[in-house]
Image (cartoon, rainbow, N blue to C red):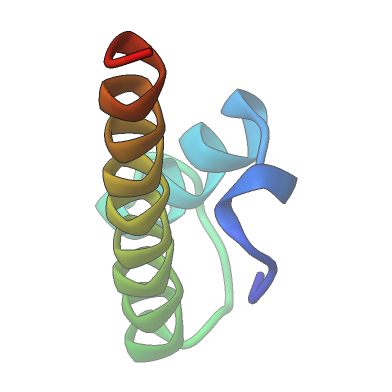
Length: 61
């Protein structure tokens, strides 16, 4: 899961979260899952900042 935030859907987000918190059993490397989760949050924060900037710009017109 290294795509940009826009390529994630809610099911994928919840599935990754559940694998990390152990409610879904998996054989994946926890460190790799954590890296994916951290990257996802970084992508989401970048997207949010861009959206807020666009909103402010639109509101100024």
